[in-house]
Length: 339
Ligand code: FAD
Ligand code: NAP
Image (tube, rainbow, N blue to C red; front, side, top):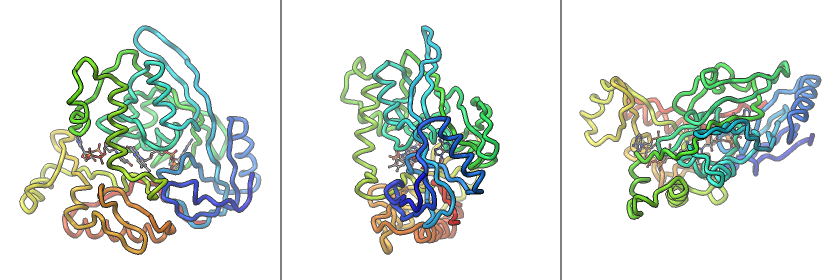
């Protein structure tokens, strides 16, 4: 365990954060030791993976547990699928590469999402029409307060759009130690997102496979998204709001070109980036914090400003979108209060 640990380089938004205590845990046993110490000293716990979806406070007086449990274990294999257990600290992209190298399919659209395997179920990561949920089998987690281990299957996790039970009822209560994936041995490509289809349209049909899809996703992402190493950011800062078709009709009266995608008979998903762009936030920068000039949904922090300034800026953005469109934007990264 280390004291007074600087976490500015451990979160992709690069907010300054000093943790009173920091412990990088590489095994389940080490996690249990860290939890025991936290209980004995009555330390609040903050779990950290790759730091790509958090807004850290300037000061954290408790214990930051950095989840670094490694490892892959093939649990089961038949002609159609495999069950693969993966340590929570494995870097997500390493898992994607591992699967492509072993011809295990299902994660290719989720290429190049930053962060760790253990954090992926927290918000049911998704991109290009695929969500983690589709390849998820189960996970193991340790209850922070009691140290008890528990298995969660897909139903237990209550996955939905960029959401799971770990963001609400069970928020900050469990440390995920491993995730088991159910992966197909025959690729079923998902190509319903226009930019992905377009990126592959020059290839003959017979050459389009999971690896090509993964490469195309990586190419598009690199061309559009700011690299956190160059411009600190946490990816999409707001979720795409889901509204009723009735509300959409009202909005279409004043904004006939509003961008939306059907969810079901009653609801549509609005493109938050369109709302932000139309409201003039794209490329706006105020005292080192702003919305990216290429992708309006990505809040950037080139000034490496603290959480307070980022949250104040995002409050202003949300209030403006509410005033203009009557739509409430919900923040995606998880903010932790100081203390
Ligand atoms: P962290 O940011 O470290 O933590 C996120 C939350 O999970 C925190 O609440 C933390 O306490 C908790 N947590 C972390 N590890 C554990 C664990 N082992 N057990 C229990 N709780 C834990 N997201 C998408 O869904 N789709 C995208 O396409 C996408 N693109 C992105 C692009 C960029 C450039 C960036 C910066 C982010 C993007 N994200 C995307 C968001 C982010 O990458 C994902 O949410 C990712 O899963 C976060 O992983 P992490 O390890 O960095 O988590
Ligand atoms: P994009 O392809 O320009 O599309 C803009 C928005 O329209 C996206 O938010 C996407 O919603 C939605 N969309 C596009 N085609 C769709 C379709 N056929 N059906 C339903 N919805 C559709 O988006 P982008 O910003 O370049 O991102 C590409 C993908 O990577 C998206 O899936 C996005 O979610 C993901 N991504 C996520 C983060 C993050 O931090 N969460 C960061 C970067 C990229 P969805 O967002 O719901 O998919």
